[in-house]
Image (cartoon, rainbow, N blue to C red; front, side):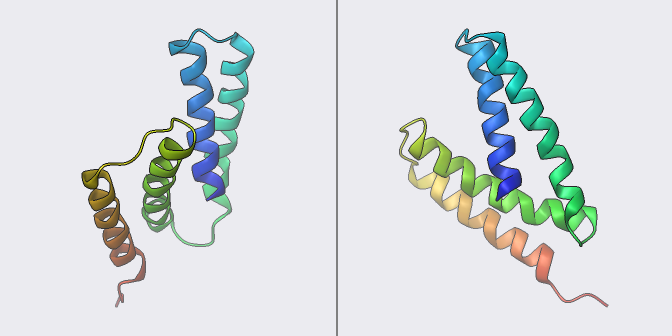
Length: 99
């Protein structure tokens, strides 16, 4: 969840700088946060692919929550349904028995 908040939050700050014409300091802080986001997955004990599969599900859910809380955009039924599909797929990738 920390990685998702860092990626979405950092990206949001860069978005604010470039798209909403905020000061460059906002973009720089966003860039630093995005760098930290890149480091966070390396702290996980599993292999790279599984870490990103697990992270992907969290990212999708957190992006929908971000839209709801920060952007004040209520998710539609397709975003909710798609989010559930992502959660199921990532669960299979991460927890399927391996030989």
